[in-house]
Image (cartoon, rainbow, N blue to C red):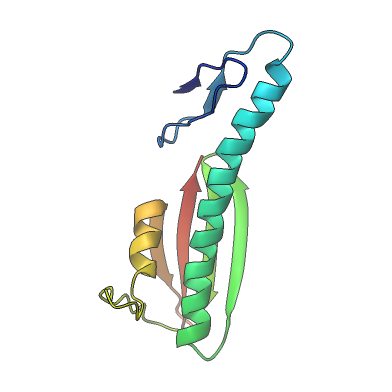
Length: 133
């Protein structure tokens, strides 16, 4: 379980685990402490979600002719992201250290959980990734 020990003016640092935010709060500054801790936790999750949205969307637009469909759902386990496109094959490449790309799929697998690719009988695929809480 993630715990914060907070005193007024102390910076908030969350551990990188996926446990729920748990705060022991007291005193007049409790509401401000709660807001600051929750904001830090939520901003981190939001930044990760935005990156994990933009990677498969960018690839779908760049590598297919049919665009894509984005679905984002809040779940008790985190934020579920699904990107459906018209391509049957994912093409994860080797990262190019000179900056020509290939890092997105590795980022998705490193930062997300429950990463999977579902192929559709009518063609195309859906990439699913979760940003854990």
